[in-house]
Figure 1 (cartoon, helix red, strand yellow):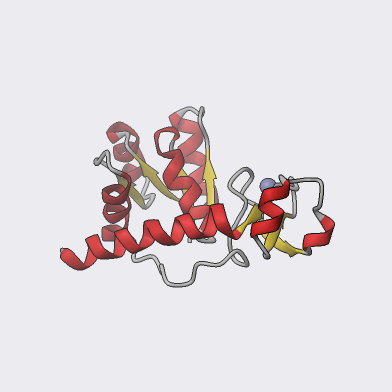
Figure 2 (cartoon, rainbow, N blue to C red):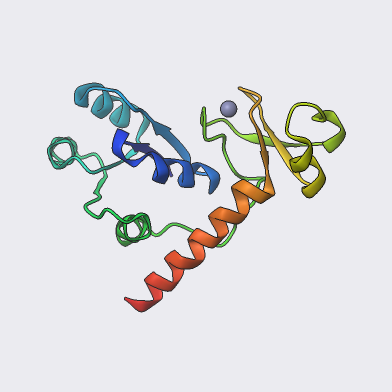
Length: 159
Ligand SMILES: [Zn+2]
């Protein structure tokens, strides 16, 4: 499953990446480029822009029109169209939220000095982006996502 997320949905893009989905996100790209990229790479477009969605559909690109403002409701809108697997959240499958590359587990001893001392003290598992070297840890990245997804699941079960 590959995604292309529009500029207004950066938070959604980050969550999809942490869930391990290959997701491209652009804060500034014109519609035609975005559509041709989605077509070439067979990406599903997720956007708030109705005009863009209409253009994409004309070209048979799978696309999801997000209309809600609340993040949980936005995620539920996406799930209505694409049944995403939400049960396996792990730093091992997460992708870098900065550059969409896979992340690899890295030994704590190798990152000493590169991240705040407090973070080192309170976390045991760390991951590093293969490509841009961004470092991730369970506390901020994985746990927040788990909490978010619990709320999403509650919302899904209600409907
Ligand atoms: Zn990266």
